[in-house]
Amino acid sequence: MSVIKQMDNRLANMIAAGEVVDRPSSIVKELIENAIDAQAKEIIVEIYEVGMKKIIVSDNGSGMDFSDAHLAFERHATSKIASEKDLNHIYTLGFRGEALAAIAAVSKVSLKTKMEDSKAIEVIYHGGHFIKDNQTSLNTGTIITVEDLFYNTPARFKYIKSEQAERYAIIDIFDRLALANPKVRFKLFMDEKLVKQTYGKDDFFQLIDQIYGSKITNDMIKFDQKFQNIEIKGYLVSPKITRSRKKDISIFVNHRYIKNYKLIQAVVDGYHSFLMTNKYPIALIHLSMDPQLLDVNVHPQKYEVKFVNELILAFQIEHFIREALEKKTHTISDRYQEIKKVPQETYEVFHLDFEDVKEEDEHKDYDNKEAKIPSFDYIGIFAGTYLLFQNHEGLFLVDQHAAQERIRYEHYFERLGNPNSQIRQLLIPHDLNVTSSDLEVINQYIDQFKRYQFIIKDNQIIGLPTWLREQEIDKAIEEIISQLSEKETIDLKILRDHLAKDISCKGSIKANHHINKQEVDILMSDLRLCKNPYYCPHGRPTIIKLTHYDVERMFKRVI
Image (cartoon, rainbow, N blue to C red; front, side):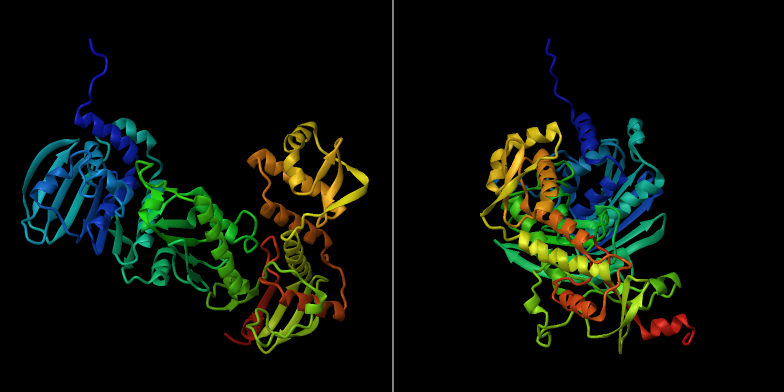
């Protein structure tokens, strides 16, 4: 007796539904993607009871004829792939031919569709069973109605989260698809209330404003770069606006929203030192490339994508983001006005980045380049920490510790970034202050330590790279051991960043430490040399500006 039996189509579709359709937002995603593939210019999504009662997706795309309207419900039926060769040239969003069949297997589906030169047809399926078809009236396009989700598979209800969570998931996927397709008009109704809409004008600044709310695009940066026939467009929201999670970093490839840890981390690293620890940016990265350079067929919901040379791509994204942020003179919302519920006013915070600071550059002429920090006059110090300056624009406060921390960070970051191959022998060997397990890591990777000029013998360091001071030995060894334990390799970039932060913080001017006028002048001259004179290495602002209007408003001189 045969043990192995072939499943019927209905059972196979129900299993496929578990992979493709796990919650209402999955249905919304699949149906919107199908509408986009049909060249729709307007897509309307209607949600009732967070999708459990009804989901309606209407579009004005190309529609289907009688035959295709029936075939669309068959598993593995697709208009987007005809041969193996097509798998390497996928430009469409949906191509597996499982979505509609899987949705119909666990719900009641009505499909109304019409092509330009044919009659409109309606096809109805309940729980994977064909119910009926008939002619109907409709403009060119398609309307798909999904009702009573999981009515025949009640076990799936346990995977449905709270009403608020399901609502958020639908809005989130709607936002991603709208951001990926700026030429398409979108509308989202939830329980007959218009929640969001976009206008399809191919204007990313307007689109982002519609998705995230007003004023999010203030001070936003755009860049457009190419490398190896890959086009990278970035839309970077100001570092003043942050999130506690990485969820608002969106990566799109050929108008497809994807989830890729390395590329998301590249965006975070690009914002490095512009943000406080554990804060993340809002950023959109659009990639356009030959589909042969990626594989979108590795996940049923097509979120995950494999790239050729993924690490190189991540490096380039990080580089382009950092370069764009460093060139920009940023502004930040006025905290006083925010507290007073008057959002119109702003003050500026100036930010800086990494560069070697040399005394001979102290009197450098800034007339030939745009000054990131304006000229102003020193008028005193507040609370022993904040230097006060003024000019015709208003009052400026400079955190003396944060300012020098940024200066020193850039100085050491540059020095550590150009290490030579020379070794400095220690007159007195330095004992390794590590645990026995850490010592095993050192012995295991002793060759890597030697490659970077760390000479270790008999549990002692007898030679160092010339760029490392003896007081930083323990910190450097601790960081290297941590990297080797996690990644089995030494990342000089991370090492130099951590060391530069540690060195710059320990040696900088502390709060309540008085400095004279000459020291103030030197501090500000050095700060102006920085690439990013606005934040300390940990993301705290170095300079804040209050306009004359801000001050007069606080004193009620203006209303």
